[in-house]
Length: 105
Image 1 (cartoon, rainbow, N blue to C red):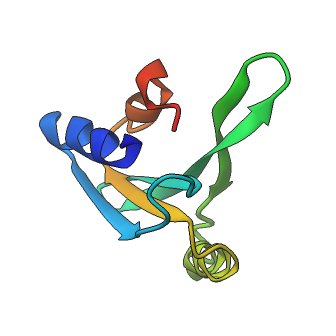
Image 2 (image 1 turned 60 degrees about the horizontal axis):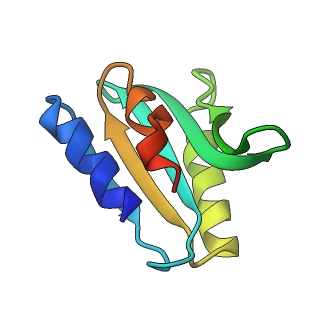
């Protein structure tokens, strides 16, 4: 499963990975929250791209003026889609763990 592979790769590189919400194993959408030492939160999800199929795209960044808005957004997404997976990686340059072709979800 892609979620376990993403977490294992980040942890093997000295980072931290955790499942914040467990979704449907076979068909659940995967959201990945990236952090660096608990700050600079960014949300990535696979979105359709007419030329490349599905690509990881940063769809949200935490606003330092209103950090609670990021968590509230995740809560809304989770309440609308119970099959959703939310994974958090806390490591510098965390995008490298999802942008590799092997983790396209």
